[in-house]
Image (cartoon, rainbow, N blue to C red; front, side):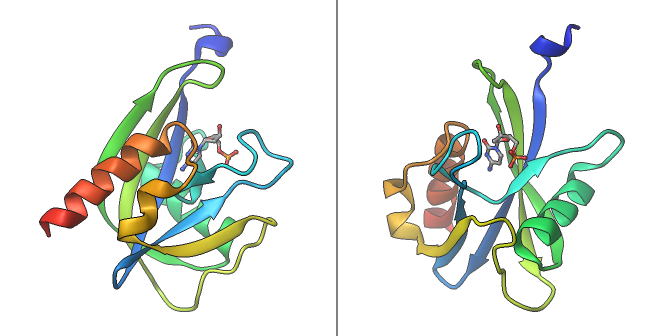
Length: 136
Ligand code: DCM
């Protein structure tokens, strides 16, 4: 397959504390500037999604996590960047997330989550998450 048709494989963190979930806002310099997302990023060649998530969260938020379980995989196959987003529940191993890449972060209450201006692939993920949280 030609590179331009490749689907980008990306991981996302679902980190919950009490009635809140952690979200990050993409910095000005990035694609999808100022859109909110669940923290994460690209899976590198040869890396498992779980290892990619642990690495990305250490890089972006300066904390180590323990990956608990896979929640959902979202396929957002539209241009300009078709992507497959693997979302995992995880817990902190200690410490608090601190942005390392000039992004804003916030712990947002479940009932406010859907009011955020999310990146396209994160919109259905947020919807699934809210539905799920309402059942547990
Ligand atoms: N991405 C996304 N949702 C996330 C994480 C990432 O849509 N929760 C997208 C944005 C980029 C690509 O994945 O197109 C790579 O992310 P990054 O630029 O953070 O490495």
